[in-house]
Image (cartoon, rainbow, N blue to C red):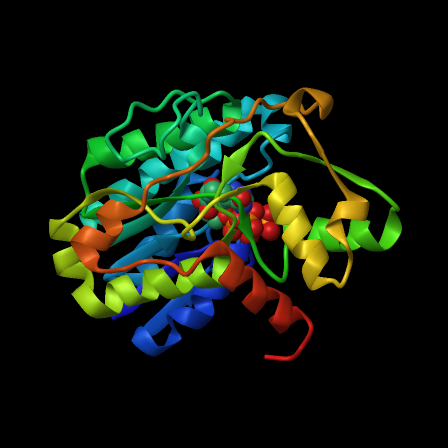
Length: 291
Ligand SMILES: NC(=O)c1ccc[n+]([C@@H]2O[C@H](COP(=O)([O-])OP(=O)(O)OC[C@H]3O[C@@H](n4cnc5c(N)ncnc54)[C@H](OP(=O)(O)O)[C@@H]3O)[C@@H](O)[C@H]2O)c1
């Protein structure tokens, strides 16, 4: 199976390039090899690779910065994704694309299911929703995997920021009224590889659509920070203080309820990610070099 992967240096892309290796030939691009903001670069890269599967792990992911540059966010997350979907259709390839909990406004109480109506609160969410809609309208064989709160041993993420701040600061004030599932990029990549390995590109394309794919369980950013502190041998009660969203100003608004139900993924494909606590321990151990 020839697999084209975009965003190979991102959190998810880096993990995917490893998880997918046993499945076939991986042609992995960074931005210089496939620039989602440049249609001709996308067309050239896909046509030269002629893959059976395209996996798009590239995206404009700077949530607050997107408020200042909506045009760039839309160029990458919507227009670039539309070109990718057109190319997937032309090549009769399966497109696996990642999207986000930030397509929802977070006002409902229960976890969101795939059929719930999106209503993004910020530019990044709007651009990702536009990308989803482009794929569905073009209707290539596709899976749109919505995930949340991604972290890894590398890249810019909450897990690494908390580790650094715990070493630098006496007290961390962390938002406790946004609830979601911290999802380890390694677990997301492993589950994506399992989907492809167990079902194959053709069967996945026949069951095209949106699927939620996050770690199981949920917590707040404060709960996540407290768990990181415990793994670092720090007492969270003494050092990690819960605060409301209103006390932490950011350019982009964020949903209070980011929980996504993963039931459809389990029902349709028998795939579920480990709990967020289990994956956090794995990521922490990997960083500590003990696994
Ligand atoms: N991070 C999260 O919390 C989160 C939550 C929900 C969903 N997601 C989704 O999950 C997917 C993977 O996210 P991630 O956390 O792995 O993101 P990431 O670590 O920020 O990686 C994104 C990658 O995309 C690349 N990229 C940016 N603009 C590009 C362009 N114009 N052309 C080609 N590549 C470009 C970046 O390259 P450079 O290094 O050159 O900038 C980077 O390697 C994305 O679809 C994201 O929307 C992420």
